[in-house]
Image (cartoon, helix red, strand yellow):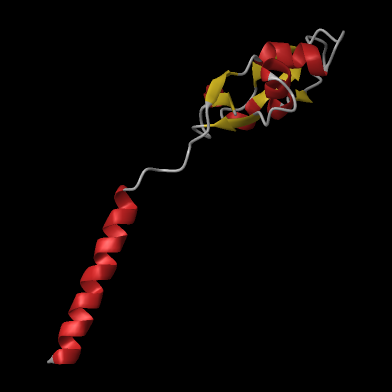
Length: 110
């Protein structure tokens, strides 16, 4: 009987600690700085080539810099690099998205 009481008490304490942990304040979240200017990314990353930003596939990696010349010459956009240009390199700025299937869900964070 005594062992059972100790076990029940210990379980209650552990559950209480878990509940306290669950309601504790979360760690500081990242700060959203703003969106990503994809056209500026093309201009910065492919200067003088007249590439325009287009979504070629409908996910976050669908953004490409393309020319009007046939055949289309796609170029990858470094979203991370553009966040650094827009919001300040060396500050720990990084790119992230909220929905893989929404190419417009990119943002820059600090």
